[in-house]
Length: 383
Ligand SMILES: [Zn+2]
Image (cartoon, rainbow, N blue to C red; front, side, top):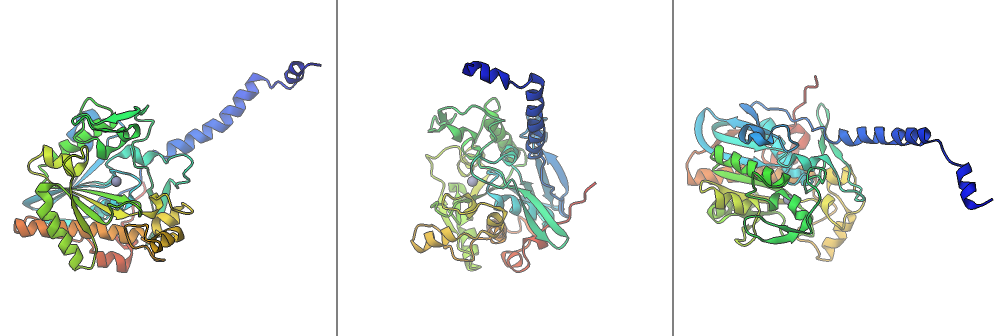
């Protein structure tokens, strides 16, 4: 008997192969599509309106880029602060700071416009072979609240394939191909560009239509990255950011400041300031060990508690740009740092333009450190 005859005798009927394939792919499909479900966010007492990005840019309607825009408007007119969380969906302290603001802050004067999931696509996947959890939970007085851990870039199913080299449209600056899916390299964007460029253009339109005085883009970086626990400010916002940094340091919160490099294009702290003459553009960075290459076991605990022995050892060897002890950098502390920055930017703005914004209810750094993050998350009503 030849090998060929031997194989044929074990041939499975086609219908059975098809059935087996469907048995595997249908549940896997459901699992994957569940990743497109968004975490619940509760409109707190200060939210006066919920819009969608497509209300500003109709081309976003029925696209995966459409995302909620929460408006907290005081009775008296004043300055407008536009806050972006989730530009990079993996940098979860930005998302949580936006959520804490939406669920707690009330303005008497001025406005907050808050977009918690700025690149909605980044929340719909995690990179293969990296072992990232898709979600994480935070303990609250009413039980657990779940949130998504996404990725830094747009999901490849929404923008594919990557070019070998990404060329920033307006400056012709060259970057590695996948950076084409990086919202924070795409500004000012283009209404006829790729998914990420169209999204960037729509977000810029929000700042323009709302006449934002301040754009605050909340980020995180891995502890071995030099730009960390840092504010990066456009030259128009530099004085404002300096005052905010001093305010933070007086509270004992170490944050440094760097000027937005003029030649580094596509970033929010550069393009919002260059495109719109009313905007003071500032970007923040806190330290997230779950993003770093030195991280150990990558689980929900690492995201929420931020403790990692590898990083303690790396800090002892002077390899990091932030202190890293056994205490780690818990999500509560990182979110408290972002929220404290929102407070201090408002205080600094009020120094320059007296009483431009009057704000209540937003917890302070000390509040979150003392009572935990869960104390400032509301209970979602499930229909
Ligand atoms: Zn980032």
